[in-house]
Each structure stands twice: as structure tokens, then as C-alpha cells.
Image (cartoon, rainbow, N blue to C red):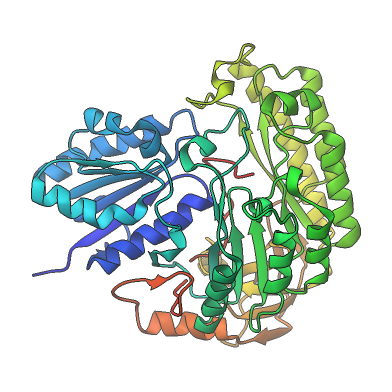
Length: 494
């Protein structure tokens, strides 16, 4: 009898990506194996880990479910599960609109997936189970990590903010912090397995410590990460300007393995719109944070999220956003056209902006940011940088005979493939010779190659493909995910 296969399809933010690693670990722990790449629904179990914050999120889900319906008819025993934020929001609606779905589960009970699949199989009816609060901190679940050298580490779940454009707090609940000792134990175990870069993850990561009333808990956590031998790079996403305090800036600047990179969501540069969004800072406060970060870390690369066309946004409001972008000089920005997000206060606000106006403003903002990104990248030409080699970052590497990786500030660097064998997780030293708006090139010879334990871990994983269950987060054995991608759809964490 052949092993049963599974496929997990992920939509949304980094939190969803990390949750999908846990879903994969749970399924492998239950005896499933991952379906081959390109299976496109041809698996025994297909899981949709959904996002609910985009206007067309449900249309996308039901369209994909519809395409699977005939495949399920032809394949006896195939099961379909829907989880994540949209499942938490729509609940019974999913099985009414798509009665061929076997399991619906929420953001708070992802650990129940294998049990629900088995129950649906035995009882031959759909199982819908939506927990209203967190049953167990997700990091105690098994995880199938996608990378041998870079790992997400969740430090909190949920969010206490009430931004009018965001439905996340309603779906993921109030913020709940993880114990510092458990976080550090997980990181130490990851490093022991060969991981050299970790990204601390939370819906509002720098509010960490609110559970215990310690406003400096996050900066203390960053400094504690600096004491872990073998941990070369520490990143975090996403902070909130409200909670971004001077002690965090000091910890970043004074802890060598905390990278000079910051993703700080702006959302709007207009004080009027920020108030309507219920963002608890104003333009002056935001630019003040940027100024302090640059004073402490002159080479820091700062990125952001911006929403264009929020209800009531005037041309003057938009110009304030453009002004803030010119002043902040972001390395890059993830820009979004506002779309109605069902269940949010903004969805019913008056003065919704016409689509053509939003589009025109959006194009102006993108053009401005493109110009700034290119100018900031040009400043890197002539610099010598240490680049951690990545896997899958350069789509044209095969044709160009290059490799790709990330500099300390998270800029993408494509470099000439050296004669010496280089593996993902290894570190190369290169000189930047050319800059484009979204990447850097190092076209000369590689100056140095440092083989690392992370590279050894990647080599071992690829020589002996991982089988069976994932490894427990925060417990003695740990596995690993992919280098941090930017969230380009779904919720703007922070």
C-alpha cells in the first residue's frame, strides 16, 4: 500500500506561512508524505490555509475549491480541508458553498487537523471545528520547516490593536506572548541543528511583554539572542510604531547579530487618515523613529507597508504620504490599493475612493518609491558585503551562472558563481558593481567563501531527504523554514 500524500496551499502573511509549516509537520507526523512539486491537487489530502483580509479572498478560495471538485469525484478517499483566517470568519458557510469539503478548522485549533480528517473519513461527513480561543501555543506543534539554514520563531500570537482596515484581531484573538525561556530554547535547538538565521515573528512583534507588563521585554529578548553561540543573523517582523521604543533601537545597534534591517509599517503619512485607521502614531512620531534608527545604525535598510486610497483620503492626505516617503527614504515599500475587507470598520465608512483615483495615486507612489529604492541601492555600489547564500532567490541564476543571497540588511544580491563549491547557508564576501531598484549585482570574483554549519545542514538534508514527522518547536529536537519572504498579499502585520 502506497503512502498517502498531502499538499498545503498557503495564502496571506508570514504568520500563515509559518502555520503551514506546522500543518505540514502535523500531517507528516500522522504518516502522510508531501506530494511531488506540481501535483496541483493530485494528493490524498489538500489543505487550504487561507487569508481573509483581501476583498476577493473568498472568491479565490471557492474558485480553487471548485476546480478540485471533479478531481475528488474521480479519486475515492481524497479529502479537502480549509483552515486559516477565512475559515475562522466564514465557518459553516464554507461547507454550504462547497459541500465536498471534508474539514473546516480555525486559527486557534490547527493542531486538530489530523484528528478531524480521520473523523471525517470514519463518519463520512464534514467536520467543522472552530475554537474561539487558543487551545495551545502553536509552537508546541510539530513543524516541517522548508529551510535548513533559516527559521521562523514565533514569539506571540494575536493582536491587541484595533486598526479599522484589519480583521486580524477578530480572527486571531488578543495577543498572547510565549515564555522567553521557551523562545530561547527553541532558538538554541535550531542553532544546534545548523540554523544560522532566525526571524522573530509576531502580529505585533515589539509589543512582546504586554502579557507580563514588561515594556522592555522585546529589547531584552534581542540582547539574549546576541548571546547564543552560532546564531549569526537575527531579524524580526513586524513591529508597530506605537510600541517601538528607544531601548529596542539600542538593542538592535548594540547586538552584533541583530541585523541592520527594519520593516516598519507606515500605512499612511496623513495624520487625518492615520486617525481614521486608528493607528496610534502620527507622521512626526513615525519620522522621528526613522531618524533615531538611522542615527544608531547609519547603514540600516528600512522597508514599510503603505495603503493607498483609504476611505476619505483626499489629494492633500495622499501628498502627505508622498512627503513621508521622500523623507523616510525606504529601501523598499509594499504598497497596496485599499480594498474593502469584509468585517472591518473601514468597509462601511463613507467616502470610499473611486477605483480610478486609487489607481492613479498608487502609480504615482510606486514610481516615487522605485526612484528612491534605486537611488538607495546605488549607494551600495563599491561596498564589500557579506552575503548569506540562499536557495530559490534568483530565478535566472541557472542562465546567468550566478548565485543569490541576502546581505545583512536583507538586500537581495546576485553574484558570480565562484569556482569553489558554495551551498545555501554559506557566506560569501563580494563587491557590489551594479544596482537595480530591487537587487544588487556583484559581477567580479568572489573575494571569500566561508563554509558554515548552516551549509553543512543544507548539504545533509539534501543528501538524506527528511521523512516522517517534523520536529517539535521549543523542545530538544528542531527542524527548519525558508528565508524570510516579504508578505505581498494578505494582512499587513503591524
